Length: 114
Length: 495
Image (cartoon, rainbow over all chains, first blue to last red; front, side, top):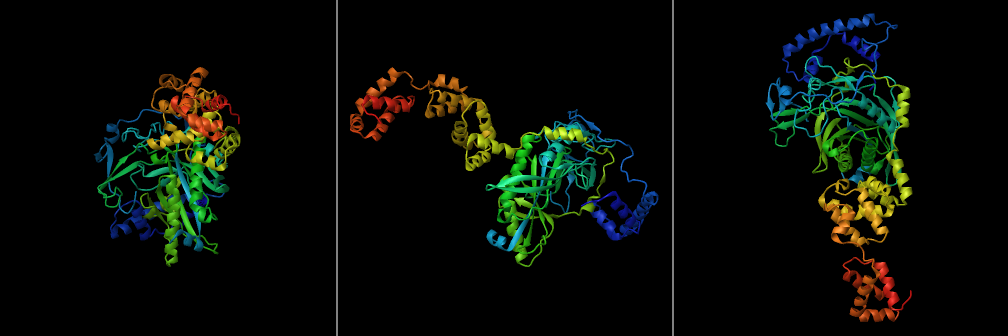
């Protein structure tokens, strides 16, 4: 299960080829989105454009440019293990679409077992 | 398929993924407290609720604890690694991703030696990485509380963001019929290592130690590993053992019937000891892992790691070996103490001055019985190692015999005070006044003339009845050995 940056790059290049309806359907399933058949084609074209735009990075990634994931040359930024004030339950739940017994009430999740 | 038959035909290969919630004061990436059992959504903030604009900050103690765990498990420590985003759409994480580690774990390539039936089995450790725990969903409306048939779920995010260490073994082949015992021994040893390090309270019943059990079978004579399943919901040491056994039997039946094992998550059922199918596992690429952009890389200083290594406590297996030698107890007795969670208590009692044999006798006898009756762990009895040591001292100096000592322990357990207070309040001191003991002996000899004659006639075994009479007359407070000597003297008999 080793995925290096190099590997990711190849993946990006592979994705430069047209994204398929099946791939959109798969992503929709992972995102729990119900897409109609005609939407699959619609989004395939859009995703293709996005992936294509991002993949242009690979064009300038020459061998002498090391892969990087962070813009800042920093490591080891930590905070001490100290407790800080929390939100009240009322504040925490204020934006919840639905609340039950001080919990966030969410639709059931299909096709998965908790 | 019966277990023995399954093993004749197949060789099991084990794998264990253990999650340990660290006992830090605050969460992994925010300052919320981590107290177990708090009312729902009282330990949450903009960071662990993923409110817009909130950014994570890494808990220094969690990094240190994870490195110490890695060192205790003989791992190499990464000189540079990153957190990764694991993307998935499920309401137990409000961010729609979990901050975890992927191909750059903080610790890797270690091992843990465990003991099964006196044999040492080395379990190779693949990786130890750090991530955040998820929230807790309660499924409402379904018949069984599981999600199938549930109408909706209610989520409490108190647990979301608690530092969680995942410890993954390499595949463990070659354990044969002992696979269930090896799995249990591994989790037991791991739990003791965590306790020794003081990094987690490792309570399986509260979920601060959770175990996923992977099992696959390969036909005997084959070298190609089979498809594995991952069993979740294994919440006790006994369940670890049962889950492995049950899964070996189930997979053997499927394979023997010409079927195929599906790579999937399965759920263990405590009541039946069997597993049922859960979801098919998502492929690693479905999680679309990428380096976490909100957190900078971790690059542990080599000298600091060396200091942490030098400061590790004595590890449990070495400590058990040392204590066993110091106490002079058998493997069997040591195992019994370990299974009863009595090793620490006996050690503390010995440290408080008690002879090892006496400390073990009380904890594994009277006190284990009492804990059993009350259905509480031994350590939660309302009595301290210091108090046991005091009772041992009173027995040692002849102030108490075992019978009186038991009454003293009972008094302490009933909340009547310290051993000395119980002795005073109940009047439990042994009869050490020779005049008083003599008077009792006179009475007993007079009342038991026939037995006394037998002893005089050379039948020394008959003295037992007379000693018993003295103990009864003194209501247990006489020193039986002293009484025996005095009776024999009085009857003019020598041994």
